[in-house]
Length: 169
Length: 198
Image (tube, rainbow over all chains, first blue to last red; front, side, top):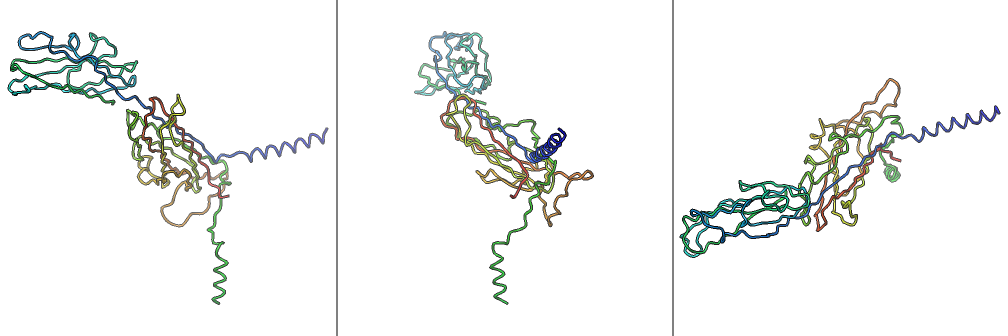
């Protein structure tokens, strides 16, 4: 029994020594995570053009509110949910009569935006620029209204193109 | 006489290695500690460089001087050489669909001339050529003079002075092809050890 115990002790000593030999502090590992989130390209669909023919002329002006008027134009923007979009547009414009160029219509454009197709709940963008987040469904609705001053207009053809720019920020 | 010199030269060829002693076995209990001044687990996030990454857009590069470059600080006893091995994926993988990827090229730089801090260390750092992912350098490079004596062995009364070196990770992602939207990830593994010249 005694001999067995001595053997065991010797064995134990070696075991301890060898475990020290395995110890290696001179190493360090780390990892770095590298990430990138890709978002969908922005798409804009024109659902309805602004109607400036049917609204009544009152005191030489046509007023189409983007929030309350049924004549307002409508766009749908599709992109990444939650991403913020800067909307820039031309706010004021003088449109000349296209044949003779004498008559002038001064136009002021107004936009409003909302997550859902609820025009009455949309928020006004009144400074020619606005930052809006895209809704949780990846959709943003924009309505276009206008105030047209016709006091300096003569009968004729008035043509213009409304430009709206969208970009992720 | 000439023949003797010639013979000496011939024999001398092939044995003319500089003396190289591997001290790594004597580092004892000294550890290599790696920390990031940017907090725990910094990530190389390309959205911080360019907020909106859209399909079909050009490559995005985080440069060494950019704040988005990941910095690690290595603290190790002075007088030893460190070997840094890096394995980096060649592309970021979409987390939902591993078949979709965006090409990625990691770049690495280090500074071992004891800069004031990690930001000023970017200035005098050494950039590895693209594609080189294994590097050996002394923890602290002396600017001039003869090498000092080999590191002293540890004993109870002596603590070895430590020095700091900095590692910088940056790189280029893209060009971003017509890939689906989502989160793309890659994992860079870094292994730092005392150099053994065995």
